[in-house]
Length: 226
Image (cartoon, rainbow, N blue to C red; front, side, top):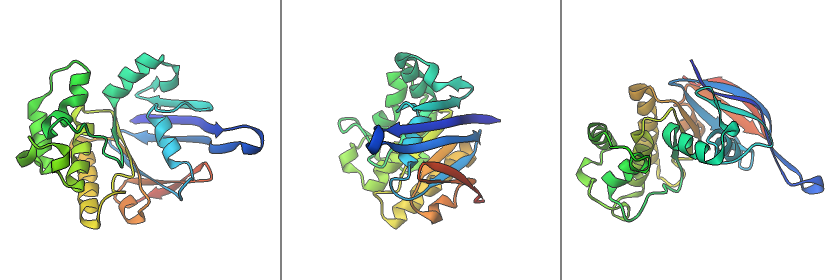
C-alpha cells in the first residue's frame, strides 16, 4: 500500500544567471512500513527533498501526496494541522524544548493537538528509548545520544503516518549513532512505521529497505539494501 507519492517534484531557487535547480522532476513512491534511506553529496538536494515531503517548503512545480492527500492543495492552517498529526520530524539539532522534561517533551506534540497522551504508549517508548530512569530530567541533563533518542520518541509519540529524519546521527559518536540507527530500524519493524532518512553514511543507509540517491537535483533508485 503506497503511503507517499511524489509527481514531477521540482524546486528552483533564483532566476537567470543565479538560477539553481535544487530538484528536477522527482517522481517516486513509498509503501507503508517501508524504511527508505536518501544518500548523496552535500548540496545535492537531499534536505530540500525532505522539506518538500514534509510540507515545510513549497515546490516550484509538482505534487506530494501523503495518505492520498495533496499537501500543497491545503491552506496553510490545514496543512499545519495535517503535518502535526501525520508527520514526525527528527532533526540533527534535536529541537527539544529546554524547559520541559523528557516525558513532557515526548507528550508535547499530542498536547499541542489538544489531545490526551496515551501514557501506556509513552511509557513503552521511554522504556524502548532507555529513558525511563530519566523521564523527569531536562534535555541539558542528557547526553547527545539520549537527546536524539528523545527526539525520535517525540516523533513516534503521535503514531504518525510517516517519519522524516534529516541526518539523525550527524552529531553523534559511532556507538550512539549505531544505537539511533537500530532504534529507527526497530520503529519500522515493531510499529510498522514508515521512515525516510537522510544519511551521509553508506553503512547506516544499508539498514533501510531501499536507497534513493540524490545528485544534482536528480533522484535515482539504488535498489533494495536488505
